[in-house]
Length: 306
Picture 1 (spheres, helix red, strand yellow):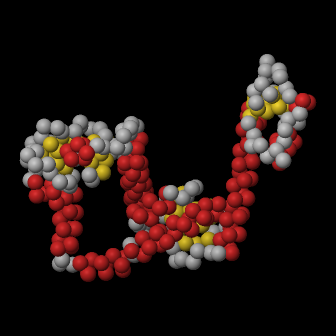
Picture 2: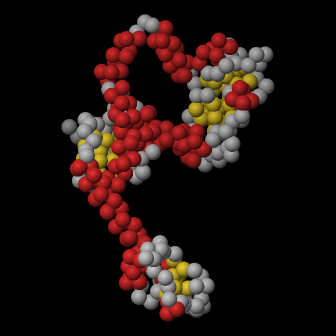
Picture 3: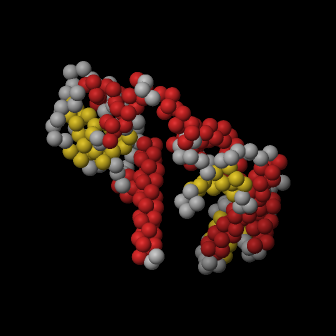
């Protein structure tokens, strides 16, 4: 039964120094709280527990953090027991004492799935994902999609797909799309161009436009690689760049998704979900650059000291 404060618990002296807190209405939590704070009293007026003392707020915060950490440990223990009883058998997953480790070939699907798992973390030094045992059930639900995507992106599987499509229309279209993307250009209406050097949502993701030289964009290329060009509309090529993490983090998202007019013209103010994807990509690019710089620095030191 939940603890119901009695008259002797009531404390009505708000002028005293102290702090208040609201607790879950279960008997065990209240008893543990009163053991930790013997001077705590229930305040009917404040509808909360009052702990006297100048450092009461810090002490309550520390106690709550310890309780949460203890709850996490219990959740990890339960997850570890559940995994031992029914493990996930996969070459992409390894059970370590403190957490589960996931190492797969790169796949956008894998990344997106793992990022939806609570408390999952990327270990950049070891190039793998870690998932605490408390998140086992969420991992178990997403594992079929993760494993299937990992298998599709194994070098042998990707090589087989390339061989199977080599010389086909699909292969030529894919190569043409890659060549077009590398040009870092995008068609925009000649009379309705987007603002320069701010985050803009497009059919190829969030970009920062840097300008245009006025070159007309041909409708065939627009239709094939970007979006259906509107009849009677004149488009020009605009150059673009990827945004830095700092730029994307400070960009305020649009309150509503793009309407049909904005989709038809090809650009709009980005939504929060679009910005989240762009921020993740920017963070990945930053990590890759830091790793390259680290490897380069290490190589230079090795050359200097044979």
